[in-house]
Image (tube, rainbow, N blue to C red; front, side):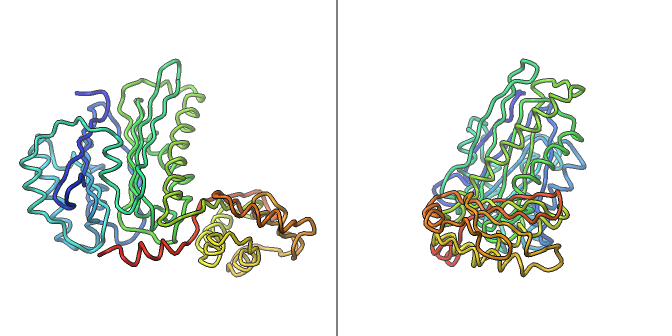
Length: 389
């Protein structure tokens, strides 16, 4: 058995002329942690994977693109189970040893006969790459999203391989995105769960393209057991957590950068809130404002739209005279009006950048929250009006 996760990218019969699926073979010494969507209509494979990870040790992961197998009723559950059963028979393991994740169009049944026939006939060699896996799980993505990073812990080289897919319907709590991450370390499951949750909260759960939450999204973290880590040293824990968070944040930024038709990456900073919950609520609201997102597309520093949105949010602590706002580092708003130091020429010029920052200081407390979003473009409308066809 390999020390690292092995990969097979292949065609499972959903798309024509390209790989549309991936199978991961997980090392025996691994621990696996998952975080899944909070959408109440979670897809069939998500429901089953949540159960399986608590019943048995994951040995294989099957991922398909082109069909979400969501809102497909009992038949959708049965179809996912049939895939798992066919794979378990081929790999001589229990169906509970297999996790499954899907992405694509909601509401359509899997072409299950075609899929099971192909699984049964296929010889799995597990010689594919992480990049080929990233390509196989793409839907509306325009770029392959893959990262490899190495660092030292107690003079041991630790490598992280990570991929994700996602471009639209990206709302905090994850949406239309899948990510698979492997780290060359032995990490107990309780610690792995904690690391993944923290990392997801500060990365995939802090991005938004259009405010829609999908039914399928999942992040999977595999600690393959290759290197023993001394977790009694706090510095080792910090280093592991920092590097996994860094990977997740970089993947998140790739998703936003590839937001369907996106031309801008916008970071919203909420500072000095009375509570973390309120800072988060404000960031969500501003990130999902169509008026603000379209202004960003037009490179328009329309701070009035941002202030109007801020003032419309219910049940938050806010004193208008205390609010200060900066756009791209430029003083824009303070004391209830346009800041006296606001240089509109410089501000307008800065809006041509691809990366935009909006910083709102509430000056009411010690809590901060930031998230990343994208602009809303004519191309976004075109892509999503034509998606199912």
